[in-house]
Amino acid sequence: MFEGKQVVALGERDGIAGPAIVKCVESAGGNVAFSSTECFV
Amino acid sequence: MDLGSQEKIKRLADEHGPEQLLVVLGAPDAESAEIAAETLVLGDPTYAGALAEVQLGLSVYHVLEDDIRGEIPEDVFEDQVGVMADVLEGEEIAEAVKGVREQAPASDGGPGS
Image (tube, rainbow over all chains, first blue to last red; front, side):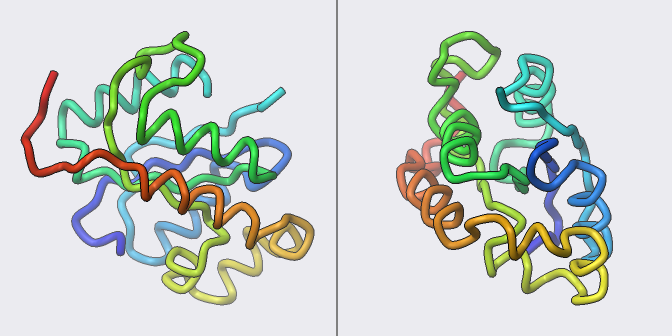
């Protein structure tokens, strides 16, 4: 799924934050090109 | 979606090609997941950011979707996502994101803009 892809991790403060998604993706061998934690109001 | 994030994602799409990008969302509910997915697939519905009227048709998934979750080692998923997987309406969120993915424009015509 992540092979050869540039992954964008768009977390949200009230859901799952960006750094948590990054760790998940990297542990699965994915390459994260950008991550952020948004605040959807 | 943050205007800064839209700009960064547009730049990455220009640099690598939209088909090389995979977006993983962490939105807390179906509504915000759907808006984020719509922005990345069909363009910014608020017409405020760099993705306004830009149909990138990106591959967008939520971290709770089986396709993504299945790739992540169980212990890492438990550490990083943990109880949120039980608290959030995972199925509803997955349906919302999948619904937007299915509206993606055909990507075999080459980059437009």
